[in-house]
Image (spheres, rainbow, N blue to C red):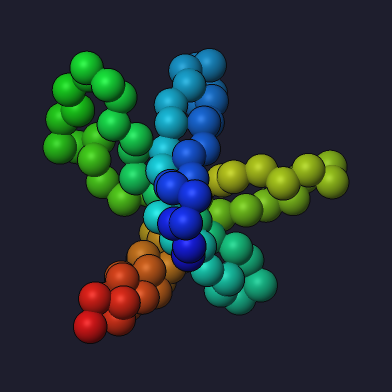
Length: 94
């Protein structure tokens, strides 16, 4: 993923209407589905606790012709995709 123009940020709105910003770290396709690895964006002047700093994995789904982001359907799907991202991250470090 090129960072020639800086990081990519995505603003999401949860079920309660609360907005939060995530920084897109990487994307991959697995079994015909696109997944994004994201980290919560640091807000200026705002402290984040360590629990909010974890990796977020979302998948792209299509609903009514529109692309939406959703959480993986199962813990197994999440674990599998998480491992794929970790393998890519460690591969890039070497």
